[in-house]
Image (cartoon, rainbow, N blue to C red; front, side, top):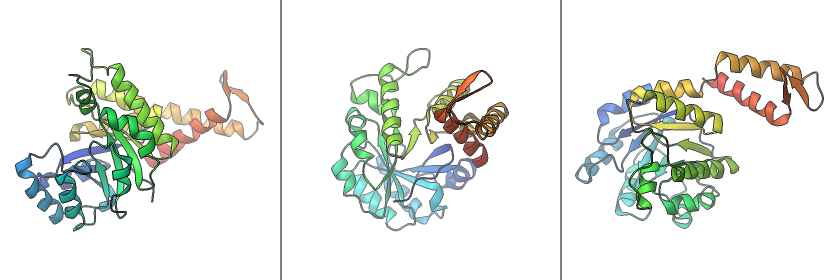
Length: 271
């Protein structure tokens, strides 16, 4: 199963709004065409038809489908079999066994957004057909009987932070893509920038978003700044003349720090 190569900003787009498809792909690094929660039950048939009629670049499309085992999942997969789209996001992913039995033509991003899903994420990402994992805050808290994933100051509650970390660690341990959850408050650009910067620094591959205006904020957060790139170049240049641990600008440099520097340059080249 090939790896999931993505840019940092993944934009959700409802599948029943085909007039937005092309714009979403143009504005973001990839689009998550949603057949699940953002489409009303009575609009799902038309949404599936719109997906069949679309002609987006399959390499830049992820389709969010219903939970495995649901009637919607079967209909969604039947729809996608009539298209070239082969990367799917499984809503409310919980069952390793069921995900393992998905048609092998499809690459899977497991959306772990319930307590059971987060609890199973380590086993799910072991599967060969799973190329990435994402977490979701609101469904997670609802599955626990809670009412809000965030505190009054806008920061995540501890339970959400724990789930976020667990999904990132599980995906990273298996070399799979890790996607950070959406920031629902579209007007909160400062909060989005803070969370996206933390996601990039922590090791997430990408952040999902729900509005085109959020794309550039996410890209900027994942894009290394000039000073960071300068530091990475200096450290790697200095490493060529040192054996083992050395000091640079008063800071100890060892192999983990050199790996950080390589990641900075890799991200800088890819933006």
